[in-house]
Length: 238
Picture (spheres, rainbow, N blue to C red):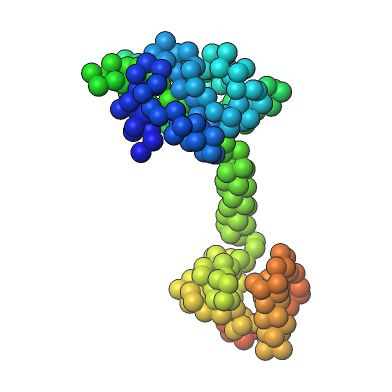
């Protein structure tokens, strides 16, 4: 609603917007916000954006809007701005890198929209930046972990299972099926217990409880297993 109102009330320098409302929003929102006029000069920015960059508000306002964009992303940013000005885009959103005052780099989700008066004339642009460094770190860690899982799962020399928190098998790889003489569809929704010798099952359940309920991250132990035909063997369970 704020940004819609900002667009509707934009009059060159957005004076038509109630100043107290604008001040409250710029102060309290957790995103970096900047507003430029139709010539690209910054006329409004908030403290959050200045803090993200490591400058004062006054310093940010004295700089060109794209001075903080990483060189790798500057050509694309300038191209999209020209498309906005030409009316070929009304808004866009993109992830890109920014450079702080101290030279360090961070990732931001950048959203830019046009500001137009009642006649449709371009009066400025509004940009919003969300710091997504932590989000990207988490995403990268998740992807890396998934790649390792996939590599493990596809390894023909390692029998692997995906097990739900309640201890039921969700999926097993071909190496597991070959080792135990079973079919993939024989695994789904079944407990691991039948693959263990009876005297080993309680130890396994205790360790599963520690992983599930006590925050233990890793469990490894030599246990005796049973193949489909009844043959027993020792295995290293991780």
